Image (cartoon, rainbow, N blue to C red):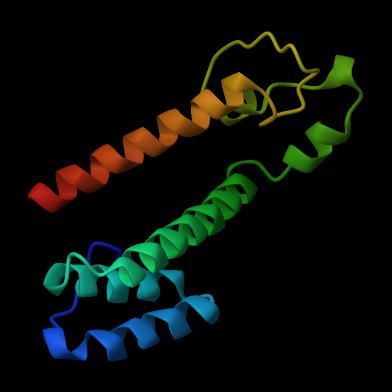
Length: 136
């Protein structure tokens, strides 16, 4: 399912759909949970429970996709992280995100402000893509 999908629900069925979304979340079906909570907010934008659960589901979905994409992007990442400092490489260089990197943390990737900046940049790009897709 695409997270941009939504279902049409009746405002009086919000509690039932909230329960379905929570069950999907608890069962690890984060994409389906996002659809349920987003659909609730389409008819009841002030529903705080749906907002909280939507945020949790989106964070879990992003985390799940991030872990999967990292494993797909480079299966040798674990090996690179286990090397001594002088033999390590920047994870972002290995993935092709940047061409050269001088590291202040012996390439303990994702522990520095540069890594946080890269994560923020990737989230901003994803948000822009989602916004563009919604406008179409």
